[in-house]
Length: 400
View 1 (cartoon, rainbow, N blue to C red):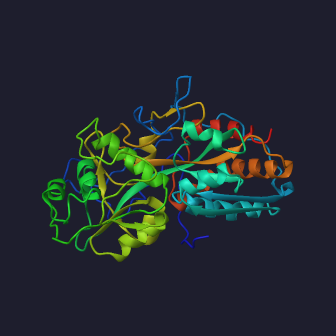
View 2: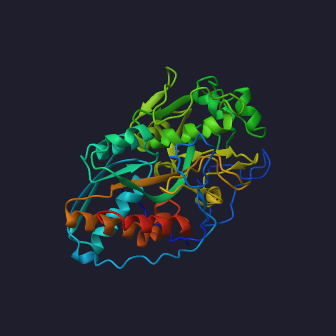
View 3: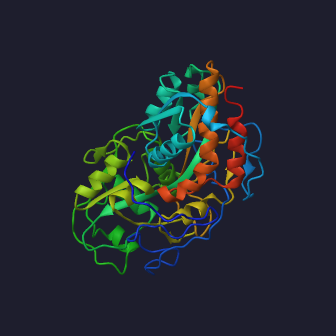
C-alpha cells in the first residue's frame, strides 16, 4: 500500500478544491488565472457521444439526476467472511483500492484481498482467463470479447471517479492552460517546445521557455489511455477540428520519440524526472508525486482545473446504461473538467465457492458504503447516489 499523509475528511456532497496548487486557471475566460471551483454535486457521469466505449444496451440509458441513495445497503456480517480474493488491473484507482483493502481488513479479518495493478488491459485479460477473482478496468469489454470470458456472465461494479491530469514539469510556469487541440498536437509531437505559438495562444499572460517538450505515455494497455484518447477524439477528432488523428483505445500507436512508463506512477515518474515533461496522469498519482497540472479547456470553452469538484460537475446528467457502463469524457457544463474518468470492478455472476462469493460481495458492499467516505481522502470523488444504488443492486447478483 502506498504511503500517504493523512488528509482532511471531505463531505460527499462536495469537496473543496483539492486541485493541484499549480493547476492554473479555472472556469473564467482564457488568461484570467482564476482557479475553478465547480459546484459540488453528486450527480452521475456523462455518457459522451455514441463513440464512447460504454457498451450499448437495448433499453434507453438512465439519466443520473438523483443525488441521494435510496437502496438500503445489505446487512453484512463482515467478521464471518473468509477467503482470499485476488485482483489485477487498472492503476487509475489503485491508490483507492490499496487504502480500501487495508481498511476492509480491519472489519473483515478473515478475508485477504490482493490487487496487483498492471493496467486495465491486463486486468480484463487476467479476469477473462480466471487467473484472478476480480478485475479492475477503466474501460469496458468489447462485445466481441465477452464470449472469451471463461467465467461466463459478469457485472460491472463502478467504484469511484476522478480527473486525469495534464501533469507537466516546466520551470517558471506555475499556471498553465491547454486547449484540446493544443494537447492533441503536443501528444502527436507536432508541438515540440513550450513556447510554441499554440501553447502561447492558450496562455497569453504567461512567459513560456523554449524548453523542448518530452511527452510521457503509458507503455501498457491502459484505461487511462483509453479515457484520455476518448476525450481527444471527441474534442478534436474527426467529428470536431480533426487535430487528433490517433483515434481512441487502451493502446495507441504513438509517434516515435515519446517516452513510455508502466502504470500511472510510471508516467508520473517520467514527468517528475524530466524538465519539459508532460503526461496524462491520474489525479491521485499526480498529487502524490507533487506534479503541477494544467487547466484544460472544456466543451463550454472554459479552462477548468482538475479537481474533485470539477469531476463531480462532469458527472451531472450522466446517462447510465443498464449494465452500469457510462463515460465522463468531454462532458457538458461550464464547471466540468473535460478529462474526468470512471472505473469499475468486474465480477462473475457465477462463483462455485460460496465462501469466495460471500467474501467478494462483502468487499464490494463495503467499497460502495463505508469505502465511499474514504474516497476523497485518497483524492477520488465518491460515486453519485444513483450510481451507488445501482451498483449495490448489482452486487447482490454475484454468486446468487
